[in-house]
Image (tube, rainbow, N blue to C red):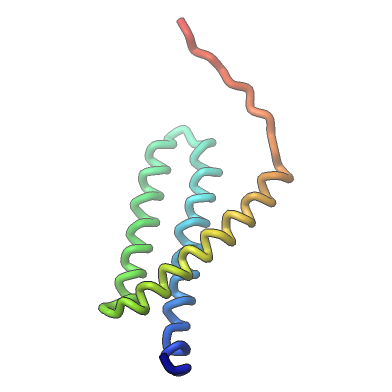
Length: 106
C-alpha cells in the first residue's frame, strides 16, 4: 500500500469520527434529556431513528463500494466512541447524584 493510498483514506477516517460523535454524543444527550422527559419513550425512539438514519447514510456515502474506506470509517466511528466514553465518564464523576429507588409494591 502506497502513502498516497493511505492519505486517500483520511477523509473516510474523519467521516467515521464525525459519525461516531453524532451517534454516541447524541445518545449521551438523549439519555440526559430523556430521563427527565414526560414522554421518554418518544424521545428515545425518535433519537434512535434519527441517529441510526444519519449513521447509516453517512456510512453509505463515506464508504461507497470500497471496503477499505468502509473499514477505516468504522475505525474512526469506534475511536469516537472511546473518546465520548472518556468525556462522559469525567462529566458524570463530577456530577454524581444519589438516586433513591422507589418501590411500587401493592
